[in-house]
Image 1 (tube, one colour):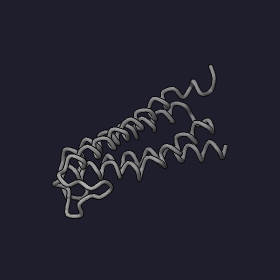
Image 2 (spheres, one colour):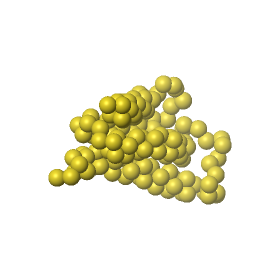
Image 3 (cartoon, helix red, strand yellow):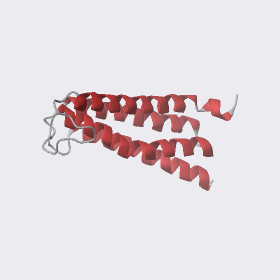
Image 4 (cartoon, one colour):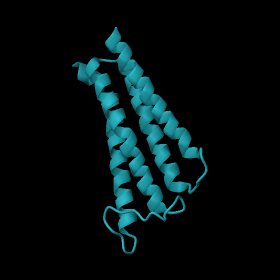
Length: 141
């Protein structure tokens, strides 16, 4: 068994993160493209949380803002040989938090802050920070 085999659970979590991101892009594209007079690359500035087009676009954009750092941290963790168990936990917590964040963003049209989705955004952020710290501690040891 190679050291990469140990991270199979983490790789499955990364796969789910990437699949979620792909689904978000697809949903946002279909929602926007189905609007009459839709212009590629432009979102109507008058849209807000009451519009599914806005919410699906923001869900995808939020992932664009958050996933690169988590994916980078995940691969760094694997490359430096962090604890396999905790690496998997942090990746899967992030994956789950992003899925719940997405579902809540699609389902709840609210301007309230914090909204229910905010808590799952924070849970994902916390798991990313924990994985980053795990990387730093592994490198320091």
